[in-house]
Length: 250
Length: 287
Image (tube, rainbow over all chains, first blue to last red):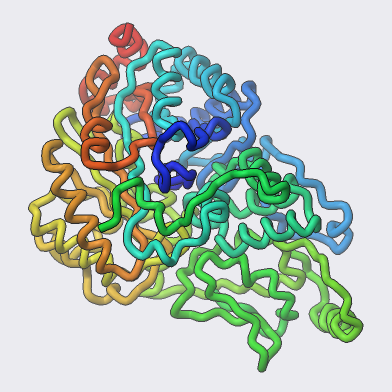
């Protein structure tokens, strides 16, 4: 699930200077079992992980084999065009877990993530647990929880044909499904629809979340980005062409 | 993936949904069609769109009237009104596209969904990357560009020449004809995937050399490359990688942190390091 490693923010283009706004509303905690090591009763372990997460106000949860708590429907009727509810269904996620997978919970507040990690230490479920977030936040969380980090993996950003990447704000939306299931074209369409007042940021974020096949799309961060696009507030900036982890181009 | 022309009404909702931009409405047919060469069989359109089961003839008639009157359409943007998306049975080598592009299909080689890699996400129980070592994940095609194995092979050959160790439990490694030379089976080289990840392990001090080679080769590829570097932390939770990366000019802002909460629970399984002891031991270590 490297899908949470390279979530775009303007740090990839501009570094970590004081004028670069930190990401403070996007923290993912995920669990992954290892075959033959701790994958016994794995479905129940994953359910225990997500049940625990639900106590700390996640903004999305998901199972990599079945999706997040907002999912597409196979049997819509025409009335859904007027009555469709964008209501999360965490029970569907819990019921759907049926074996090997990866499960994740997304938080928009550090305090909630931290409280969840505290609870995980206490629960001792047995599967590997990772935080995907700004590294300083994850490190702080570990210190606060009294645990030593085991391993770290840094995202170094993008290289190669950067001219094929979309603009920064679209990238910030689309990479929140790191598997690439939220297409840049669709994210751009949702940005336009919000600007045209055809949909609210919450509705547009929910449409995108349904395409994320493992439930790590952060609907609250998406709503913020869409609202900023509508209001013209400064959000992501800088051309995606500079999105190479800060390494000077040669 | 194909779109059933008998069902499609040309509403174009599926066009922007495709991560590869492989769908367009044909002016001649007035139906959506899939560019088979550009399609990576990720199933995003089929799985991600909600479906209605309306009568295509009725919907086309309504659309013709609305179009004639220049009505502005405002439908739900993630719905296929006539359930026209039709997955095809895939055969070798095209089936490789789906294995690397649809995250809900587990890789046969590793049994892992997504990109099929474990990296250091389970390092607390596998001991895959040890202190003094670094793992590198080099991903091709994401976000939203796609990659051909011919490009991926260019990188794996260059890395093999450096004498790196390719992680055997990795989907790309299992498709190599010769892991020592970094060559990939010739019958899949033209196949396009949404993304693929090459995993290597090197002694820690060789990280700058490997990153420089990755940058050099990336400039020659017709795709985008995303790189991640990992290591095992010291017992106190600190690690030397960030300082190294910053010395090399990289911004080490975001990443993943393995909390070390995993432990061996399958009877008889062997535990690397302190994994059998569970989190309590490491809590004591940290405090």
